[in-house]
Length: 478
Image (tube, rainbow, N blue to C red; front, side):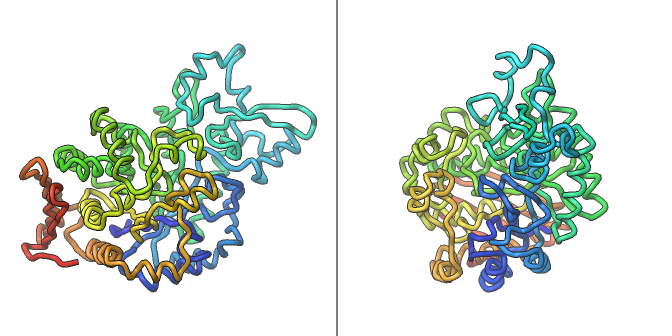
């Protein structure tokens, strides 16, 4: 595992395809980005790639496997594997529809009617399920023989849930993972991982011990290839930290809201507490292709602090409105807020650079979303054109636009910060971190490598939104 900055991007968000994306990275960010999370680049029927039709092809609009492999020669690559579902337009689902019980794929999908005993599910059963929508997670299946069935359907209407218990599904997982690895992937992100195991009389979310059995099965596939798994979970930090306790990498999705609280209120205490208890074996975020997670920061901020931070975001954020995270804009997830991080800070350069500096010094490996890499503002035109809330943070940059953005001082300084993070030995995952709060509005974060020969210190004043970086006592200028 590299310990450098990871860029999160779609294949067509910085240029039109994978080839142009690499051209942009090589030109502007070759020393600022070590790894790339290339968001789903497979043929897909929806959800911006997260309803994959098949994993053995690259969407021809985006390029070829040769383009992917070339990118992997220069940047360590992470890709998504949707362990919970695939598209209803996949060859496997279509074969099941056409052949029903004679299909070789009949056991790949989680049959709703076979899952429940006679007389169930009851209303209590449905209420117990941890759901992403306001109805039972089920969809009808109309077979070619004229019969009708039902399949688990946790997410959108395009995404049909897999039955992780069957030999058919486990072989599908193995074949798919090995194919991805053969094309240069070094990290596999397990999307919607916590939803994959379903069990009677549970919430069907992060069901133990089944979730650990599934993770071990997947780990057994990738271990011989030296590939890392990154399970993706949006939930209470105690659930996420179980992954670290079991030796896996996890995500820090709590940092974005906690840091906004610090910047809005000039308070360092909540942030300091979080940094002290965060595992080193994690990936940190301020922004992703989704919205800012609110549920992730629960109990790290009080309910009142979460509400105050949310209300302040809508007050001071640039073009951030509640309706953009509502059903009116195709978003029923009340636990996420749709905005770029730059606009959440009112398009304030100083506040934004401070936030990124804290992220660089936080425990773990920093991920920077492509819009955040360019200090991007909320894209209201794309939002209104599509009526899709999350598109406010999914601007399509041409290569020429990236050239223009690089002229902005905030983008150049951010780039320099990322180069510093990539090249400074003090940021050692096996080293130490020391966090202190000289006052309620100040924080210092000290990172040292394992032998103590390199020490980097970040001193932040949230009241003035100023920060200073030193290495072995010498000031660093970005």
